[in-house]
Length: 111
Image (cartoon, rainbow, N blue to C red; front, side, top):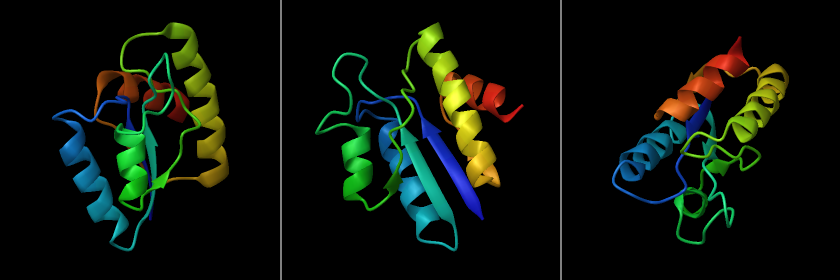
């Protein structure tokens, strides 16, 4: 089974801890998990952010999407097209999302 796991927040805040715990647990099962973390719109991935912590946990971290937490329509549209290409190429069985922006991008990309 292949899972695309999207989380459109770059900060390691309260919701990020259970997200990373779930992703790590799934990756330890018979699952191929691709973790897509959000990006800081001004600085990119932070050294203490979600992407860095995911990498330290050994997750397969894909930073090709912006996944900004708050609405940035042009960036979201670019993410839809990039995720759509990734879906066609990798054929995941599940696309798991947590936040409204993740859900919107995944829903449009999966159509």
